[in-house]
Image (tube, rainbow, N blue to C red):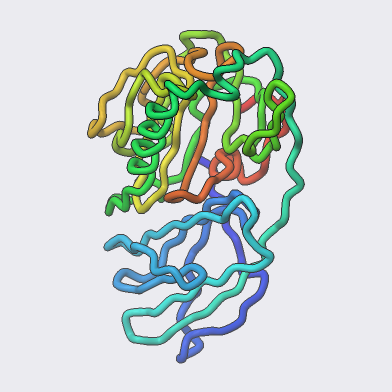
Length: 278
């Protein structure tokens, strides 16, 4: 698995002693990025004033929002009581526009009868992403869940059947129906359902401390809620269920409700439409 080491772009403060090392950070300070860090066991960490869970080994993580920036702050209080404050510049992104036509109109403007199901689906997804589990499977990094051509990128402003809709918060990977989808890292299944209105067969994996990945439009689910999975394990098969014009995997990543770009958590750089990954 690839690991990307970052240095502070702006160092606004150091520990009281001036000798303690800054946290070891992996990831890219870009909108949609995931930062994985390690500090001294027993330390406390805050990201933009928000306290973070820190594992007994010192692992922690946080995400940079779709429109994060232009700077972010990381504060660390070490076990000896000394504090560090680091400020990082956040790379701004220009997002594409994507037009999709030919969708059933009920999948663009749902009928009244579907609104109750959509609301329940949203509650289930939100609950799965709100989990603040103590495990730190994210710390070892992530792999791609399958080998495929990128057909849609993170952040694209979507026009569906000519109607503007919210941005696309995932990566679309075009692959034949039935292609195996592998867990990109270890974790626990926090949601597995085959009947969500927009996304059809859907799995969410909890990688710890609010870091999760989501798999949409599956034709088959191979896992159940509460099940432990390991990196590389098959969790489901590519399909075209829910709002889809053909078989593909829509792969998403989150830090709690903060939307992340899956390509940044793997390769550290955004992908372009038409690329073959990995």
